[in-house]
Every structure is written in structure tokens, then in C-alpha cells.
Image 1 (cartoon, rainbow, N blue to C red):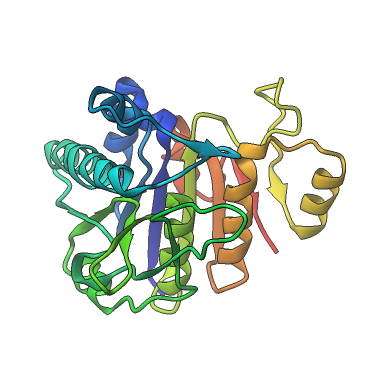
Image 2: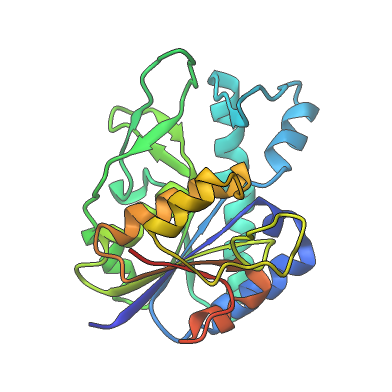
Length: 262
């Protein structure tokens, strides 16, 4: 099978103009089919405040009420997505910016109201129909996916970009040998969050459970690891978590970040 890379870049990378330009240059240079999934960074909060839309969070998760879904759609699917596409075109990468609503590539369900009402937040189906995504990838177009999905009834939904990347990776794993790479501002998963060089080279389920028991993992890394295992358990060959600055090395057979295995 041919190799395909699903690369997810997060908020800190998007917020740092220099780091983002370097990451996109490296991404454009990957000589293989590839997909870029991006988060939102701080821009939605900044623009929202200018528009009088104050952010609301519960346990670190944004509450997406009616004004906020309009805001994040404008910022994530509009401003950020198109800036990324334009930057990639400058590196001779034929990118096409999409949301989950485009060509029905990522349908989702509105999260049910429980103890917390997250508003217009979408949970992606475990597997999605990738035929339209394959039309793009197989014709040498590079999808750039904003973290907005839809419910099939006309409602847009704000959706976790880590989850979107995981679902795309595992849904494409029947057609490609997929490597999923989560890029952020650390060199990998750190055993000691105070020590930037304490990268854990390999994490399997046994090691992960011990790290949880020892409370060595920062809360922010947990969703990435959970999504990584979800991908590995559903056909994705490799998942790597590492620094956006090390993207090219992390494309190789000797990555510098943290490799997630069963």
C-alpha cells in the first residue's frame, strides 16, 4: 500500500507566525499523499471579544452557543483555513480548504446535553465515507481541513481537530498505509512536564496506564494520546506526537517525537 500522511497542527503552532511558516514549508515538501487538519488557535477568542462575544469554558472546553458557532465558522473555516491554503500555494502545494460539510466528508452528531450543555459541538462518527476525500487525494490535491463538521440537517458543529485527524486517518487506512502525526510545541510526550528533554520515545497501552497512575501526564496531552490509540486500534499503522519544528524528521523511519503503539 502507498503511504499517506495525516498531519494535525494545533493552536500554538498557528499562533506563532514564524513556526507556522516553517511547518507549512516542511509539510509542502512531503513527497507523498497528505492531508492537513488544523485547530483554531487564539484568534477566535480575540476576534470574538472585538465583536462582543465572550468565550465560555467548562473544564477547558469551549461552550459553543449560537453566536460562537458563527464566530468559529468565520475564523476557523474562513480566515485561518484560507490563510493556510494561500501559504501552501506559495510553497507550490496545491491545497484545497474544506470543512466537514464540504462534499459531506465529515458528518457528525450534536453532542447530547448531559451535566454540561456544550452547545453546537459535534462528535464525529467512528468511521466516515472517504470516497470524496479519495477523489481529491488521488488527484494530487491536498485537503486542508478546518475543525467544523455538520449534522446532515443544515447545522454546522464545532469539533475537536485531534478527533477529526484520528477519524480521517483510520477511515483512510484501508486504502493507504497511514501515518498520523500530531504536531504541537513540545518535542513529544514528556515524562516530566518541567523537562523539555524528557521525551518518552514509545508509548503502548501498558506504559500509558502506568503514566496515568503515576500522574506524570499533563491534562492537555491526554486527548491526543486517546485519539492516537483509537487510530492505532482501528487500522492506522503509526501515530506520532512531536514538535512541529521536527516535522521532516518525524516523516522518517527515525522520528524524534513519541511513537504510539499497541
